[in-house]
Image (cartoon, rainbow, N blue to C red; front, top):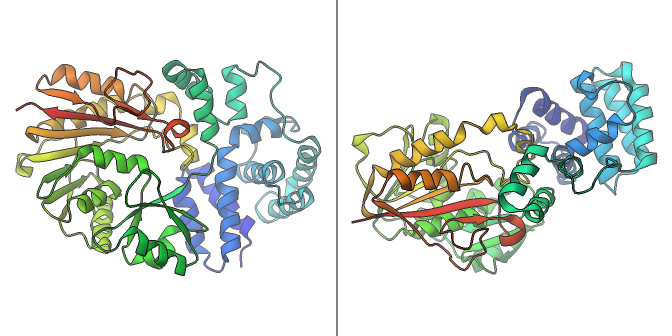
Length: 441
């Protein structure tokens, strides 16, 4: 039987070497080691996500006590040092001596026995010194980048777009544990009954104060292991994504296109709002994701969804026309860093081509919309180049479309803007962008 630290090490190594997504790496690691109890599973999850969240600060602290550049370390050794430093600096319940000795043991078991003495010496110095920050202006992008483990280019992007205070607040919130928010499947149950059902499984849940049919869960591990989930009584969905569905405002009997639908959360919420009537065509470019949507709808008892393989940027006359269209486009994900911490380590070059892809998708979607219909453009990123700029460019090309106010009383960076940028520290949601357009009759 593998120890929890060994399982966490293997997941982090896979992320480090292969670029695996953190959520998938953790899920797979836990599924492959079913003998771990709930406490160990939580420990694995904590170490993997915590290490990734604090990676730049951890590496800065390690660099103070190493005689060679971090980039020259073997991946196995680097991963062990990172894990050990995270436990020492940020896990109060783990004694420093235990973190050091267990890290030495990991080194001996994972192709790093030659460096066991290095692991011991470096981590002991980390424990003795505590967290160290660069000796520089605490308001400089360089300092903030290390403190919040957020690349300097992101700090500067946010500061330029949203102001210095918002940039710091967003970087700080990106280190928070995100809430577990779920959407009640109103086709099968209601909020009160689901609260009782979850309580029977030892899960504490409470109604959202500002979002109908929404619960915030606590005292839960993996949501998909719950019996209530397997019975299709709810699906996980942040409030920002639900607001996106509210903005679409579908009604009973509508034909709705969800252009980039996987994994299907917004599709399912739209279906529930429509009372499982009308038709929702849920498109995705990969068959595995199309199947994921189809299976999710089946579990939830949703029958008005047609899950179809399609490139959202390519027009298909056989699809017909829609009353409502959702374009939740592929994006850089800078608004959901706290859920997927590896996103923060993308480079500016990695995301440079996204606005053109996003623009092609919304332009193609516009061709399907009926006169008088509504189109919603959304992303889970905080980057004007992918948000406001794409929408402005769209309006300049399609003169028969106009932007529509959505939640006009919500705080906005630009009070005159009809677009809504949601920020974790302001709105209590994931970072998100929503723009609503209507086609003139």
